[in-house]
Amino acid sequence: MAALFGPRANSLAIVMIVGVLTLAVLFAVAAYLFYRSPYQTAVGYAPEQPVPFSHRHHVGGLGIDCQYCHASAETSDFAGIPATHTCMTCHSREWTNAEMLAPVRQSLAREEPLRWVRVHNLADYVYFSHRAHVNNGVGCESCHGRVDRMPLMVQRKPLTMQWCLECHRNPAPELRPENRITAMGYVPAEEGIAGSELIEHYGTPLDRLTECTTCHR
Amino acid sequence: MSRLAALVMAALGVAIAGCDQPEMRFQPKYSTYDEAARWPDNQAARQPVAGTVARDQRLEPLARTLPVALDRRLLDRGQERYEIFCSPCHAASGYGNGMVVQRGFPAPPSLHSERLRDAPLRHFVDVITEGFGVMYSYRDRVPMEDRWAIAAYLRALQLSQQIPYDTLSAAQHSRLETDTREAP
Image (cartoon, rainbow over all chains, first blue to last red):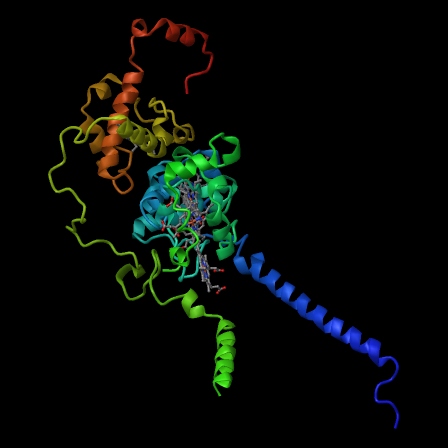
């Protein structure tokens, strides 16, 4: 009876075993990369808006503070999207005939809110609060990036659990004093207030920050 | 037998962990500003019924003058709020040449005029609450306590521009004379 396996079978077997294992690992790596890629985490997501509202113009150019428009960031979980009335505090007299602003005027006349498209959106099983962060030394820039350079709002951070935890495990280097929360281009390390000092100042509950029930409740 | 059961349970556990759970990610509930087809205006955010009183709302009539203690904290808060909500037009200095005015918005009067220096604090609170001429109301974004804080800060800002030269110390005189920065 002829040998079932020829002399090459041994090396073939090794090639196949190694090949299959390599493929499996490659697949896992690819799946993980995909899972963490901007495609999944929506980094870079910048949907078209009903009015091409420019943060670069209003924040970077005119120097308006975030809270002029997102006034509830300090008092509620939700940062708040400005009402049409807020745009009109200036645009009643400013660029009043611009075609670009026609939807704003229409919204005011018809008493219908503008339909902004949501950019950042956490899964519904995650609890998030602006108030908890903004009043305790975490600046808008840490989570939203250089808003003052965005002609159109875009998501800059992955908003994954890993990303939240990276900061929650060690928030000290990210903390700012109260009067720099909405500042853009602020570098905590250069300002000379040690993170440990700010942790003490705010009484940051370090032990609680990595508990599952902090974010899943 | 129990080993088989354990195996089945483990396999089921692994299988369930593999499931995507879109219904947890998008739960059938309204979040702030969602659309809500069944409600008027198609909005989940409701307008309170006319006459609604907030739980922590103060019911006594609006005070005639500052109802809280005047201290550093109040002034700091007033300054912060003034710089957020008022400085785009009135400028940090109060002279009325803020950034938005430089881009064509009608110029507000200087807050250092004699009339406004004599005005009671309550006047500033009323202007913030009701608006004034082309200036819109800020009642939706500046709560009552903050209006008083801003009013108190405005008075301090006015005083800062009215200090007689003679009352300054010698050190302050020399600083004034050597300071080459322009007024903001």
